[in-house]
Length: 69
Image: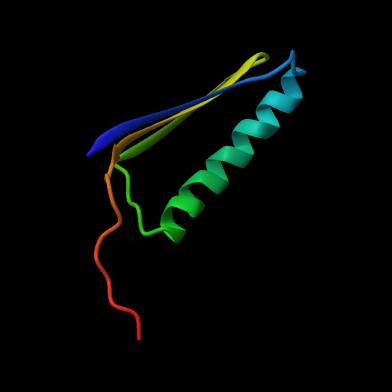
């Protein structure tokens, strides 16, 4: 299991844009990980007017094996 950090630098964002971005990341990141069969131990999302960041703890290094029919 690994810890993954994604940090995105931005130009100065208004506070309501930061709140909106955090809300979108809170819904989309877990959904996207689930679509790829990745189940982390925890997700933390942070935002400031110049940075957006997500820390994904306990991220599997690969997808689990599965069979498709």
